[in-house]
Image (cartoon, rainbow, N blue to C red; front, top):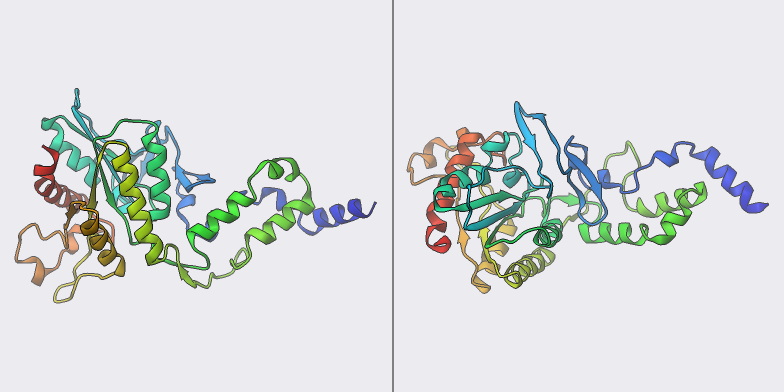
Length: 316
């Protein structure tokens, strides 16, 4: 009798609670709201397999593995899988205008297929798990990683803590009890502790992935790639250069370089996409960027060219 009264009160207090998403990813990032994304309990969000539609004055197409479509040789002899965040995915540009797509075009004559495994909003925490999933789908020879900008983004809790909350509340008991309003209310309160209430402004407190966690994720990424019989490659974070100013700086770049040196992983420095041009220092590279991080089609082509040159000896 008492439980029935409490359950009824819970339903009356929050009649819309049934519609609350099971995975409250909007408290961590907004990429879940992109039309080609869906919630995922392990990596928080992921591209929708088979999605195809117009976006950003171009096209976004996702294959059955959740990868953005890129051109492929008729008979590929080797495969390079590019992991990263929105820079790798190609935020703001069409399928064939990302740097993995441009790199695939440059390497196509050599029989090397380049696949785009970048996902907007991802950190090293998510990418490490996305790598493990992708390695179950396909054989790879080379794997590149460009990650770090999102790791340092301040949020109320870390990615690791958020994952623990999801894992704790998504087991068999959740399947059994989720129809009870009192359980959904308690679960919502527990999941949201330390997070802003709907409509409230978040108060960032900590990096999504602290530097020590970032280093550990990079090391684990390299180990899993090598255990799969593939060669890992790191790509330094590209940045926009304001005329007369210095490139954007993040402590994650130094950690990336340190891990690369310690584990003997090739690190390709595309820097400010100078391409050997001395004019960049005085004119800036704004023509290569849509905003402070994401590149124009031309910027992606320049980056792909720099990568192809630096990776040449390793890919032979």
